[in-house]
Length: 453
Ligand SMILES: *Cc1c(COP(=O)(O)O)cnc(C)c1O
Image (cartoon, rainbow, N blue to C red; front, top):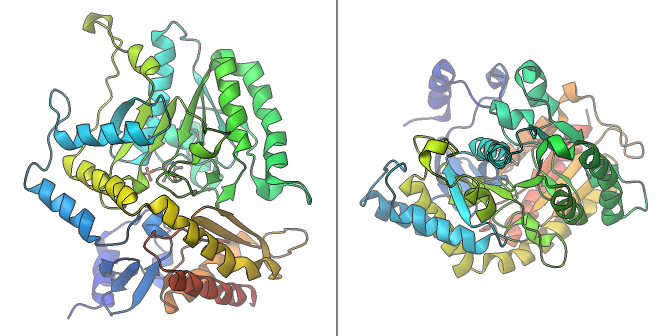
């Protein structure tokens, strides 16, 4: 019978893993997964793990979900893939119709790609190209937030701000204008999230006032900067930003690749801004869109943007961007089944109880001497481990204490992969309250172990 070690040996001989110092794997080898079911993953030695991080935030309805499996199998017998230039197919059309209906008003056109970074590249290129097509070639810059993350390809990396991923490649990257993130971890004691986020907006307003004439778009991750260690902010910032982008004639790109599909408690984070939610000019979606099954992403935009490209061919104003697997039918079928499941299960409502359970199960951690903050936005809950609680002084990053929590989790049936010293739970929505309690207990034990050396 195949064992974990068999797979590990073969893996290390030929594979180069993402976001990994490969030398680390000599002491902490990759865990070979044999099968999944619901929140559970099982390795070749028969150990089981609750997928507390939804396999990098993509999984929504559990592994090997029968409904989504069936949708893909049905589509597989129709057509597996067909090019989308000159051709079309029903799943691509039906999914686009559904996305237009469930996203904020005004996002009426859907452009497909196959990963989140590509969806961001599309938004950046479309925004720039829109301004060129409408006689504003002087608009060439983008405004982003500190600690933001928008993907790893060069354009997406450039508009991000996580130096761990970006610094090496800086000479290759376009240079955004960067405003301070409304990240509420940095608020003064006694200041509310809303007050802090509102105060941070002054810097964005100033950047727009000075640079709007040369700026295509502002790009943000609504409410949660996930890769930036799950830092969170108040929806009032999005409300102010929408209003200012309109006033300064600059596009707003909402990167909901991580926050979309219910992660923040609403279907999309943009819904929480203001009394009625906001509509960005571009919305990027991926990750949860296929419930974690297949690579797919979309960039949604408005009729106004679309119309600025709609012209006689000779005028060469078309958006000539493409990827081979654009609008893959299997991925579209998985995405349609995902949206069906949200509706059939009334999942956004059902999640409210899970959100409360996550809050209750981790509430005691606030008093832990090495926990600076327990923060939560909807189905994302993060615990920030520090050396000195009062001063909020982090541990030396070289000590890699978050990894100790991860190692402990693996011994307790929990896949809790941290971001540095920030531990988080961002589970599939089929998790049970008891499983949430187990994750919280494992987190507490892991933190105790991690800080005790
Ligand atoms: C994951 C992520 C991306 C990049 O998506 P990939 O599919 O990994 O390229 C972009 N933006 C945000 C907010 C993300 O979380």
